Each structure stands twice: as structure tokens, then as C-alpha cells.
Image (cartoon, helix red, strand yellow):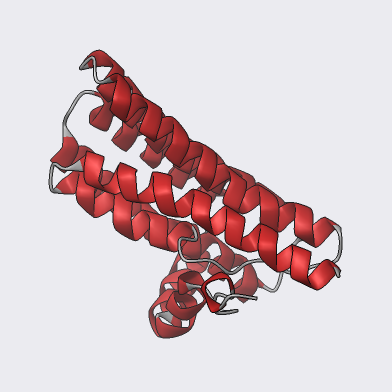
Length: 201
């Protein structure tokens, strides 16, 4: 198979968890110590993303973007807290994953509203393409796992999408991030499909 379709088995998310473990663990221990539950943090992240996305929908990119930027680390902390408590559960991981999908789609919804309000139908279509690609990246992995395969690789997993999209919003050029995600998220879904095809032979 072409090397372009054989991405690394480690994603940016994997590297970030390893690289920042020395920061995540103390923060998780502190939050556990003051009595905050992992699911509470998950809910707080979802609400924060909703607030940030509402601001983005109104064109307040800097404030909305920084709120979204701040919410990013919360996605890693809730899992860290559960691990440190010694009580990670399948349902907790399931809720965390579902909430991540909602959070990402909420951001795209804010961008979609902004572009529709501005009468920019092309960018609205690209936002839809970006959101569809992002969902498919996760769906392909989940469907592969249900068949007994692992397909978490790709050029634009969730961490990469966050790194591309949120800074572009803060800088006032969300269209730049949307275009990249629209192209590479769908390409990543294709990469994972081809990985599963190779493994299923």
C-alpha cells in the first residue's frame, strides 16, 4: 500500500498525553482532592464550548476562541481524574467520547450560523464538510473497533483539528481553519477506511 495511506500508529493526542502527563496528573489530583467529579468536569467543558461557540456565532472570535481554547485541556483532565481515582469505567469513557463529539459539533454550529448570517454559502458548505469529516473520523474508528480492528491513525485526529481550528478563530480567520479541516478530516477518514481494508484482508 502507498505510504501516504499508512499513518503513524500514534496520534498527536497520544503524544500530548505522554508529553504533558507531569502537568495533567497534579492538576487531576488537585481537582479530585477538592471534590470535583470527572463527569462534572466533562459537563463543564461542554457548557464552556457552548458559550464559546455562541460568541463565535456572533462574530466575537477573540473572546469566543479563547474560551474554546481554555476548554481544550478539560477534555484530557476528566479522563486523568478518573484514572487517578482508580475508577475509570466503560460508561465514563463512553460519555466522555460522546461529549467530545457534541463539543466539536457545537463549535461547527457556531461557525455555520456565522457564515449563514453573513450570506456566505460557500463557507457554510465547507463548515458542513468539516463537521461531516470530523464525525466520520470518529465513526470509522468506532466501527472498526466493533469489528475487532484498530484504526486511530490519520493526519488530522481530534487534537490536530483543535490545533488548526481554534487558533484560526482567535486570529480572526476561521475560514482558514475550516478549509483545512474540511479537506484533511475527510482525508483522515479515508486513511482509516484503507487501514481497516488492509487489516481485514
